[in-house]
Image 1 (cartoon, rainbow, N blue to C red):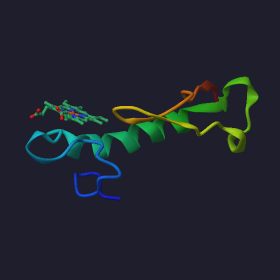
Image 2: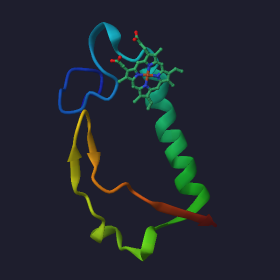
Image 3: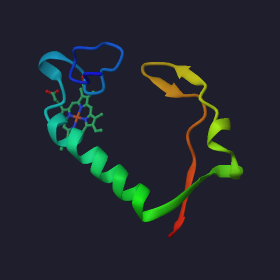
Image 4: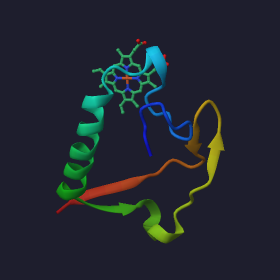
Length: 77
Ligand code: HEM
């Protein structure tokens, strides 16, 4: 999905003249940051919930957010 304003299902960086000027950097940094975090820690869900049981309910507002925030707990490798 194109996040640069062509697909209105996902307008992460806004569109048009006010589009986030830093999105080219952000699009490169997010995978690096996320990959570093995933590779540097063991992760589990709060209260030992299984990933398949994760509550994916949505809350509609100015943006579409998870109704219940994801709480992932890191522990040393
Ligand atoms: C995941 C990271 C980011 C997301 C999702 C994001 C998203 C956005 C969005 C949606 C807007 C438009 C706001 C509006 O419509 O008024 C915006 C504007 C802007 N963003 Fe980002 N942004 C991110 C990171 C950054 C970073 C790292 C920088 C700079 C180091 C940055 C600099 C700016 C600036 C200066 C504007 C204002 C542009 C203008 O109004 O002309 N953003 N960003």
